[in-house]
Image (tube, rainbow, N blue to C red; front, side, top):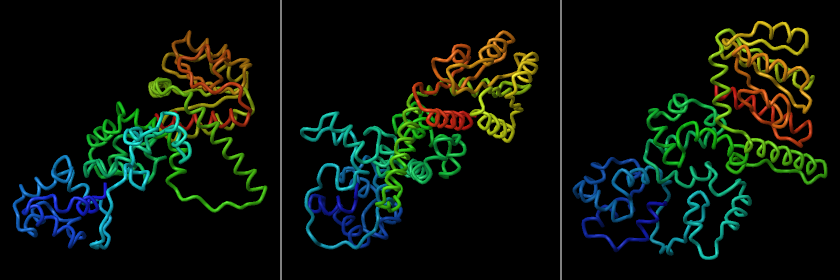
Length: 376
């Protein structure tokens, strides 16, 4: 909502006292955008109640809503050039909501879906899209949260409520209110939606480098597009509750987390996961030798957790160890294909897509590890 544009458009419909406020804003928008309620009333020569009434006459919810819009206003030189009536949705997609677009004649859900994809979103309900669309309608504190998220979506998708509050310069309670304003159940729901949207949404918000017209560049771009699509599909398949359970199992493993993998492709994943857990303060031990795995598994207790990694349908020793761990009372987190023998033994399964190439399955493994560490 361009507040100065709105004032210009409605000029002549206000009372004599309210027109004094209009005059101050249009003559000095720079002052009006930073003035307090009392300063604006004093400059206009009216009461604060008059300014508050003017705000509601303008279509704002209350004076706080009005002041938020004024502070978000980009100050430009105001002329007396007549303006036409605003068009639904405006000229910036950031200010069009799914509800308002859906009310336009002839706009079906299928058109909305295709439109969303054409501007780089999975759907019109994409959380980043919604944040941009509602940013100028939020309270001043919630607007800070929105800006912090849009500035660094990747950080916001993995930050704790305290970290995000600190980044935005607001209280944790404001983060909770913001999440509910965006239609999320809580901060976890907000984080998951941001993670789902960040790969696509950040591409829309960021300026894209100029692409070469050569065949090689086209091939590279095609490969990137394919992999991005595969990762996004994998993200849609993940179950947030499974990650929450997995993080809980790892957090409660006082005597350590045993990371088991028998495939050479998973060795680097296991090593990286071990290093990340150690840096985060969790005792972690990685094994890929079958004999060492058997020996270490023999000492498992309810104070241990097992993290089993596999990209294959044939999991060999891993299902046996997972079953043994369960019998000993240890929790088993498996990052594996959904229809594999290992998946059937897992306490918490972070399910990888079946039917993918080795490269895409590896990307799914990396994504699962990143999200698990973020949850921790």
